[in-house]
Image (cartoon, rainbow, N blue to C red; front, side, top):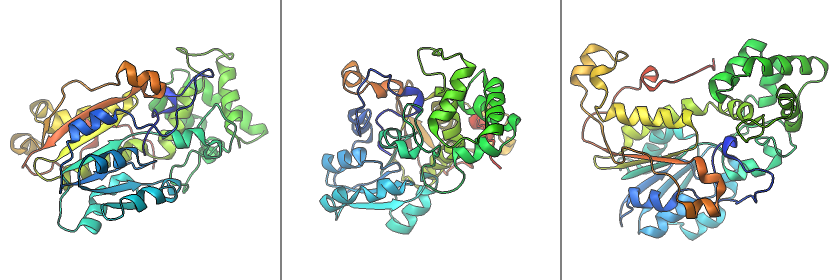
Length: 345
């Protein structure tokens, strides 16, 4: 989805205006992706179409865009009408982008894949989606509008499971105290609204901000990541891009918090051959034989300029990493080497 600033952890304070649908690091994405006439690109996170539109305007090329959110698909009609001969839009999680590409592009392999990870401004700003602790709405958080909601989880999971999710995906050191407060509160009245959960978490911190942020920031981030299996989807999408990109194809990933960026960095560094000899998670034979499948473009992530931050404060935590596909065979996906944390069944 086209992001206005990624995770709730990067969301606006009460005095900041909410910039809607502003694609983050779009100039840097275009410079790195370098769209050319006749080429084909995959935008794995369509959202409001910011990256897709920028790519299609930069060159006479084609874009296959994906989004798991049905609202994003419904809102894409104007963009589809404008670029009807050059844009294909499919509702799908980006973890299946290689399968979608084969179904829609046939044998053609894309020249680039761009991924913008996390929650979109559209989702954060829509109270009915339940992503934000700043607006009252149903405690939902499901990007696809299907499956287990955040309310389902906090109302039925064990105290230990809630604490583990909040700690693993929110890096919240008060996770156990928060889990206890959630279980105690739900015994009287189950959670149904976002502000109910935000209030329960705030009470653990006696209403004080944490590092200048709302005390529920990390908890909401953790629940959203867990409910949508975001880290699992990210790992799958990186592997899918590796399988589908043609030699010389570019992979560009914009992430918004350390958990995402850590996975992206480890994936690119590992597949560039920088850490193969030291990896104890890969079988010995693969350590000897696996040729680098990517070449790193930027050793340090690109970050927003001051000018962009003045226009879009939500972009402040964005990080862009990129790599170029080599001719080597794709590597098998090994979640352990990515430092992956998975708590879903």
